[in-house]
Amino acid sequence: MIELERVNEELNRFVYSTSHDLRSPLANIMGILNMAKIDAKPDSAPKYLNMIEGCVQKMDLFIHKIIEYYKGIRLENEIEEVEFSVLFRDSIELNHMVNPRINFDMFVQQDVHFYTDAFRLSLIINNLVSNAVKYQRPNEENPIVELKAEVNSREAVIHIRDNGVGIVPDHLNKIFEIFF
Image 1 (cartoon, rainbow, N blue to C red):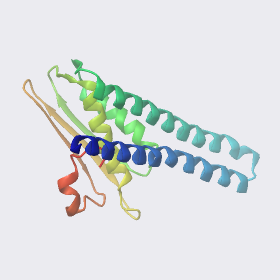
Image 2: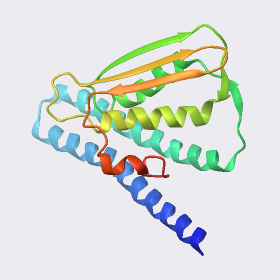
Image 3: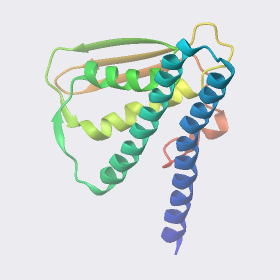
């Protein structure tokens, strides 16, 4: 019974989180459409259409990530070679659309082949970078997210740092709970 309650609680958090994350690009699209209505210049249309396209791509990618997550909890580990510069670049491209003001710095020291579950590692990195972007201070003059990987034949040490608001101390003991 306790296990069922825990699973139901995780499901509730997942549904809430997913609904929230899917509504965000829709709200952005509505805002862009309202701006386009106000800005009646005919040559402005491509700019607004490109912005809407970016929001739609973000939503599509998020839906794909939900499917990947679902498959990820259902699938066995799939070990493959990982290039951290590619992994970081993909995450930066995805998250730069959310807040183009953010400066991303990337440093990768990888002189060896590294093998791990690339899909799950990608999910973790994207979640960390997404949170770093999402929780930036609104008035920060120089918002920054730094991604660093130092890889040797035994391990990969990854650092993701930002100058956002940080984690409330009361939440630190919950950061490894699913969907928190």
